[in-house]
Length: 324
Length: 293
Image (cartoon, rainbow over all chains, first blue to last red; front, top):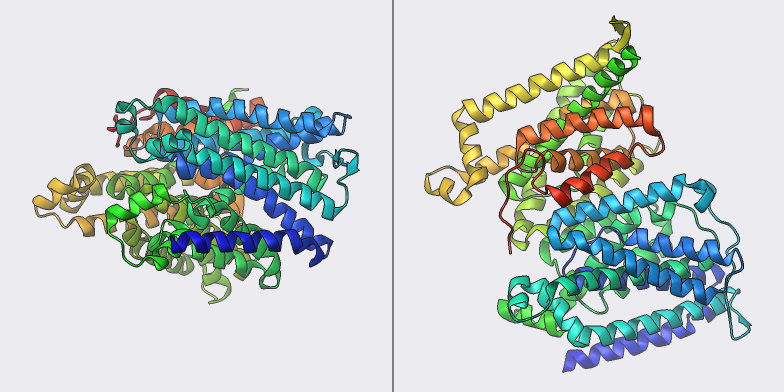
């Protein structure tokens, strides 16, 4: 109970900070915070796939890319933002569903390689199909949307716009994880055979976990395009997929707040510690390795362990399921 | 036309032989310790830099620098990698180790960029860069040397694994560690040997491939990918699978670049990978592995 209350207190503090932040930072700082919100949405999606349903995916960057290209292509041709936003989510959901089929046949590292191959193939398409994506020159001047006639084009407004999306996505994910669906995801992760024998349609839930994760990737991309206002292939290579995977795992895969924390470490800290240059990435890499050695459950898993000293092994598994 | 094909074939076999070396190391680690090394590409990138450091900072000539690079690689990429990363992590299962090796790949890349530089460095070739004419095709001598050395390395490895007591103990360890332990085989030491052999193989691959593609900190990205594809297409649990996969990949890659599209040369191996995983996950030559629950 105590830890529940401290989580709530931390969440309230974080929310207050996020609301006040645009008044504390210069435009570039606001841009980075907006990027954090956008990447967190993609990481929340991956956390559903990996953290809750236990299916490794190295293709999240591809979905962010699809979402970003759909939005950029259509809004620069005059389509309204909301249509393209929904389209990005739906298209990625559908492609994610299809990408889930390999997960029904192969597991673990094979799945990692299939999704990795998918990501790299898509990157080649983004780069080479100039008639569609503009190739390496990308798509310029992606407009920012209006909401009820109120322009979101300035950094502060657009930041609140993305923050609102993050809040909505978080609420939806929070609800999902506590719904029977979320329980079924965890069942598929922990023991697929048992889940199947208890009547859980593991097939459908595996596909659903992929599709939902991909859909959130698409939404993240739909916000990325108007944020940067320029879309080119480079950000959507395998590197971003690996980075998103590390965000989820470093924050704490299977913890609700894992992606938020992971994105802080991967998106915000590098900017604030820019004076350290390449050393930051090295330190980050060492952090990842050390975490995996001592606490594969990530930073939140570490916090969990420090708050509740030395629980029995069986308890950990139960707590992981119960802890949102 | 025929000359072109012959040229492409030899060049493809040469790069393919190098992929095969890397893929063999990859499968060895998987067989004996269920280690998936996502940093395998960086493992190939790094030894070349050890050699370059030996030459530029310690003023060694090429071969002593290669010897130094080999020793340093076997210690760091073999012994230390196993002791510091794999041993403490193996009890957590496959996934944390995958993540940790992704981290290791970033670490190695950034360390080279930070301490050595981001520019591509030339690397001395093993053989003089000349061509010989065979049936009217200009065959690069370097390719022939690469193929010859790779064959020698694979034959030596096979002789070691099948012909010596230690080699057979290693095979027993790979097939069934529990029974191997009961038979009194020092399983831990055998696993360590596979890590050392992997380090030696990537060092060899590094010295063979870097003269062709120059030494650059990003080399590991595509090298690792090609090694994975070779290992999976050939069969994850077979050395000969890795050889076939590597050679096939090198040849296909070269022909695709020449006749299909240089922009999409990477796409064909990836598509083959997806098709193989979906329809024959054990690989072209592999045994079926029981699905772990």
